[in-house]
Image (cartoon, rainbow, N blue to C red; front, side):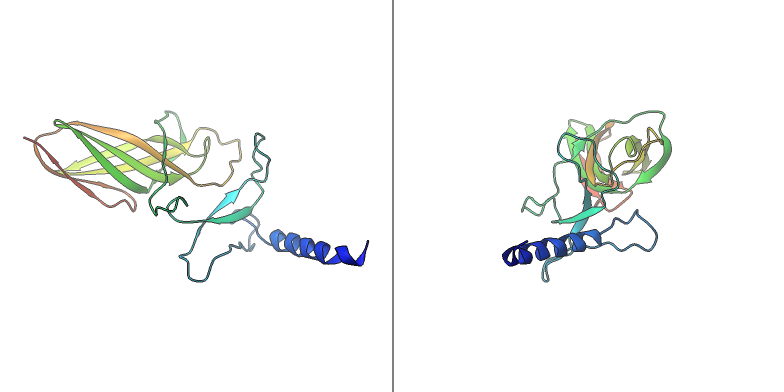
Length: 192
C-alpha cells in the first residue's frame, strides 16, 4: 500500500464505521438509530432502505435509515401520490390506522371520499376495510388494516396508500366528513 492511498482508505473506513452504528428501531433492545439533519431544516421523516440491488428480494434486516423531505420530497410541500388499494377479506390482527388526508367528490347527490394513510408493505399491512359511522350530518371514517400472512418478515418502509369510499346518495345539505387520525375534516355541500 502506498502512502498516497491511505487517506482514501481511512476515509472509507470512517464511513463504514459510521454506517455500522445506524440501526433500525426494530433491532436489538437499546440500539440507537441515527439520522442526518440539516440545522435549519424541519426534522426529516426517516424510512429504512433495503440494501438489496434492484430486482432482487429486499433485505428486511438492512436497518439503513435515510432522511426524506416531508411531503414526498417533490419540492411542492404536498403529499405524494398514494398507491390505490382495495380491501381484502380474511386478514389477521385487524386494527385501525390513522388517516392522513381526505378528499371528497360529489356527483349529483352521490358522495365519495378518497381516504389516504401511511402504512407498510404487503402482506404485513393490507387494507381490511373502512368503517363508516354517521351521526346526523357528520360522517366519520376509520381505516382498518391487518396481515394476510404472519409467517413472513416485511421491510419497514413507509407506503402512502388510499382507497375510495362510496357513501352513496345522500339528502341535500351540508356534511362534515372526518376520520380517525390526523386528516383534517372536510365540509361538503350536496345540491338540492
